[in-house]
Length: 301
Image (cartoon, rainbow, N blue to C red; front, top):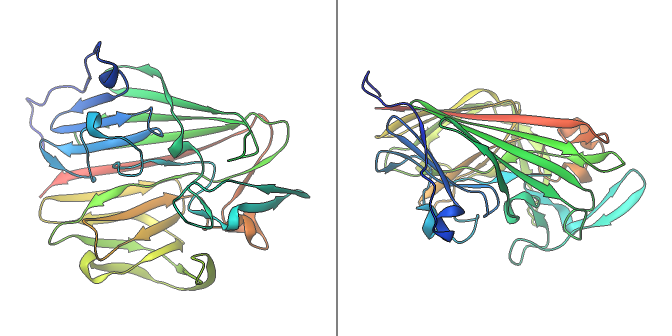
C-alpha cells in the first residue's frame, strides 16, 4: 500500500566501487528491486521495505545467479534431455551446466554476463549477445527491460535470432518466492506433465488447477493451459503473477524456504517431443524476434 507522499521511482546512485558497478537498483515507493546483470542477468532481490517478496540477497553478497531471486531462461526452459537434440535435419550437443544432471538446464543466459544498455529513474535495460558455442549452437541477442512502480515489477524479454538459419527458442523466468507460514497458491491450469525417472516429462494428465497451502504441495512439474494470474498470498503480501506466456513450471520443495512459479513458453524438453512447436517451442527465423512479459503485482495485507 502507498500514500500520496510516495516518492517517484529512483535509480541507484552511480558508484566508483567495482562491486557496486556490477549492480543496479530501482526504487519505487516501498519497493526495491536489485539487479546483478553480470550474474546471468538476474534479480538479486525484491523487497517491500525490509521484507523480501522474492527470495532475496543483497546484490553485493551474491556470487552466482542460481541463489538469486530470479533469473532468465533463454533460449530454452528447464531440461534439454541428455544434452543432445536434432533440429531441421542436424544433430547438436550441449554441455553440462547444472551440477551432476545428465541434462543441460535453463539455457545459457542465466550463466553469462549481461551488460546495462540504458537506465533511467523508472527502467533499466540489460542485454546479452550470444556467439554460437558448445553450450548453444546458434547466435542470438536478448534484452530484458525492467520496470518498477510502487505496486509492481515488470520484465520484458526480447530475443532476436542473429543466426543465418531458423533456431528453436523458448523463453521464461525462474522466480523464487519466499515461503512463509501461510503461503498459498491459486492458479488456473488445464494439464500437468508428469516425469519419468530421468526427470523428463512423459505423460500429460488433467490438472484443473492448484488451490492449496504451499506446505501441502509437492510439485516439480510443467503445466499447460495457464489462465489468469497466479495468485500467491501469505501473511505479508497478496501477489499476482501474470505473463504473456502460457505454461508454468511449479516447484514446491518441502525442505526449502522457497517455492517457484515460473512462467515459460514451452513444455520442458519440448524439443524432443514429436511436435515441439505444438508444445510451445518456437522456430525463430533469421532476424526475427520473440518477446515475453512477466509482471508481479504486489499488495500488502
